[in-house]
Image (cartoon, rainbow, N blue to C red; front, side, top):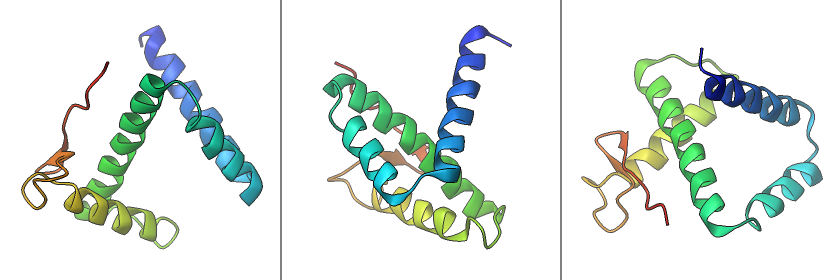
Length: 105
């Protein structure tokens, strides 16, 4: 496993640990901090989050969810469909479920 993969896996574990015990005010503080960072980093963060949405949408499509994450998967499927270039050419973020590249400036 590459070192970059280890960093990504640890970052995901840290984020999920935060989510596991975060209060509503902590989640809001997290969101404010992320959306206040450098705009290029915000774009990268958004792309990362949309990759999660893509994965959850695929889980919904394949029936790989249960009641604990049902709304996440169903909502992700709706987001992906709404932002698909084939259903909404004005806001193309996905193309047949595949995340399109977002500009990196």
